[in-house]
Image (tube, rainbow, N blue to C red; front, side, top):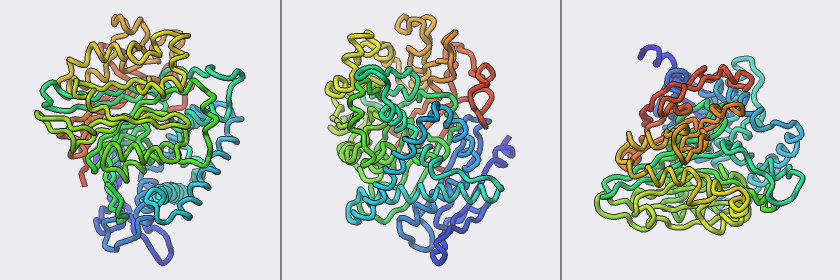
Length: 518
């Protein structure tokens, strides 16, 4: 078995050639003296996850930060190029369902890219823009790495749009409806629940013995080309809080998207998505802004506290991928003793507004749940949930939607990692009164079991960690739809018309340990 797994391991080192402004790549070599080195373990078919680990900025020559980020991106692009091609093939038809959408989306993305790069050139002393430049350098490196791999294989390289597309997938959930408002104004766009939805739970044990955090992603199963990433980038920019991140992710994606991150700064972050039903808010969306994925990365790079994270994230709000972010500051958690203020910061975005508050007091009482309904009253009202609740009932209530009830009832059973896993994989829709027979009125949705309206989307992973593990950037993760309570293993067979290139035919995986090895 080990021989098989080892044969899937690709190692490489990238060296920067400053004379020719190019990357030299040595395959099969892990050289800590190189500008970037790392591996990709292609174990998707055996465990449900590929694993990527990259170190950059530790080489013999002290290169500028933008070179460090470019080579890190290049190495990732080269090592994971086959997966990037497959993931793009699978995701494009999911997002661009109408060819009329493509032109305006491309134009918006090009304007946003141009604006961001102009700001980077103009603001050479602002840490926010310096780090934006570094993220864009990493993106450029990623594209260069994929391009060089494709040329070696005699394949047509992916376009710049394709690479950017994989990074803005979350932002497109709002950008497309903003660019294409449907006929009637106001509260008219009700997205089917599974798209861009998630469940999350942060649990403080009764005697503060441990802090547990978990997240389950809901989206199309076509997105299950998974890569768990461990990055360790040494940057010289003095405002950098950390260059170490471990997170669940996807090919070609320089962020988590789920989101689930453990950071070297002592922060953990997770997220669930909120809908924008009040489509008049979309008028705030402009390309002169930073996409959500970019602001998340900036906050990770620059923040050492939850409040700093929220303030950094709030700048140049694009109003796209409108989420509830939960940021835990591990330095404020004193086990068996106290939770200091600032231990949990909750951040929510809509177009035109980012609101955040310290929710440590809620965590002291035991738990913080998250399930795609905004917590902050102003965000809840402005985004149209109040209106939806009046029209469609308690599915849109913060306190009384099905998952709020299930979390409230069952969270007390969470006492360790195993019970946490069970909670986040939970789906007993046939007999749970709160599910009312709907496989998506549960913590881990199975929309593929909807009967005549079945479609291959819903909850397709779970990540869990606790304070001790998170301090070492360690988590456990499982890929695939839940089989809780004897639900059938998901198979692609009934859904062959959905593009699922390179994906496992069926998903019967277990939790695996994710920890940095280099």
